[in-house]
Length: 328
Image (cartoon, rainbow, N blue to C red; front, side, top):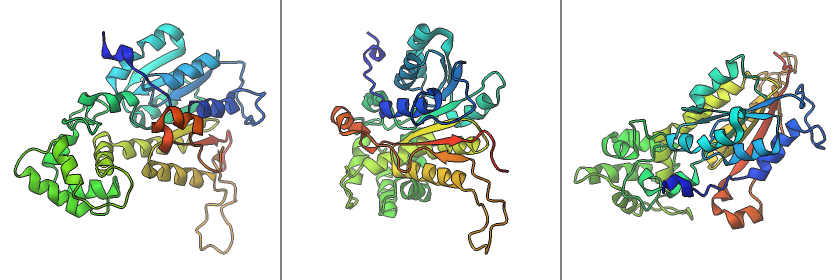
């Protein structure tokens, strides 16, 4: 049997996602967003990280007039979601690629009037649990590619990047205090033999840390972000979204680097006044807010969800609604 047949994928913050989009789609929702959407007509949502279809399946089942445009970089996920196409027919379209690159084209396509954008920017349970994909501590191979058609892998980074490039990755993407020592130990070790998963974890154990996480956790995080250009893709998404209107954006992140970027973007978009902070008075017109955040604080997993899925513990959901008519 194909290993994908037994995939057990539990969408994180699923109820929170459904509740968030219900505020845009369902006029009877007490927190309904007053927008220009005619809920009696077709509504189109882009699922930027389709994965194995858990979120999109739930949305399509709940709203009969909803269509999904799904994007994923993992060709295994694309293949798996043939069953979504069988189930929902032309209500779902699927594209293979990076959402940061594909999103502008889809939004600007006149055939697609987009009402919502969803991005769950974590690694899927399937990717984490499939040893040969190289995301797990149990894997000797250091791959970590979400798109297995790309060339850059974690082992290439470890065995070919300069000491200074390694320092940058561990400092910026892992926020590891002893990033210089870590990079130096890797360079010394790779002069003797190729760096494997076991060797990397042994090196990580030699780095002191006050963090409660496994010593290699932030090392693996940093490598994964570099391999998949995760922050670059997130920044492309946000850069595309700054010029949209009448659209609800919902993003789930899994570590502080991502959440910090999202939080700052939403804060900037919410500002009416864009004058310099040292200005004595407002001269910009005080009407530049692009929209508003739906929640003052990010939504996190309930105790019930955490009991069933410990991987939800670091997930944070933020949502932003873009006005139909913004200040210019």
